[in-house]
Length: 218
Ligand code: PRP
Image 1 (spheres, rainbow, N blue to C red):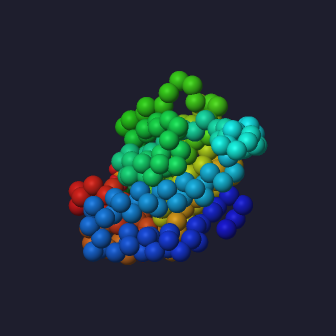
Image 2 (cartoon, protein in one colour; image 1 turned 90 degrees about the vertical axis):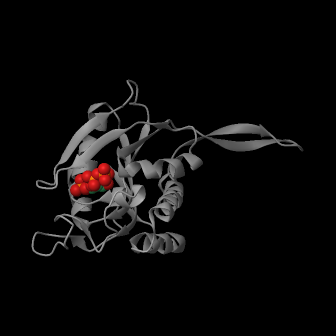
């Protein structure tokens, strides 16, 4: 763990990420596990958010309490990030959900944006970019750029698997972003060692394509 990288060491997270890697996990199970992991990572990634003191009336007396005091925007990167929304919302139901669509060009590995549904007023929010995979980091980096251009000052990336290359790229471009992931894998594949059916640039050993595995499209 460096200052802004948090790799969950929770035993349930390790168990569930192992299930996601397993090819015998079908897409219905895969979707459920992505949602469960997202809830756990939401708990971890929100640990430093603000509360404000309030007085609360219990059945016996009044006492001091705390109320969650942040405006939160969840930014799932289509398509695979969609599967992380419900888990996050189960802990932060008041969050807004803003969609950004990127696909990764399989030749250049560069992100191509095809959808942007950010609201007008977002600069006061803490934003959580949701994407199961941080591979080259190109998609996450482009999403952070868009949010910062729109005035957002606090951005967190929440993902499931990351490659060291993607972490380095994101940290190199934006050292103020906190990165919360379930696991960090060895590396990205290259043209010499990419397995059949997978273009270079996949996380190794990884879990395959998180979008295809959630939605049954492979
Ligand atoms: C995958 C993944 C990320 C991106 C990661 O999306 O879900 O969005 O690639 O790669 P990067 O870090 O190198 O940018 P994909 O292009 O497969 O689209 P999908 O979500 O529609 O499956």
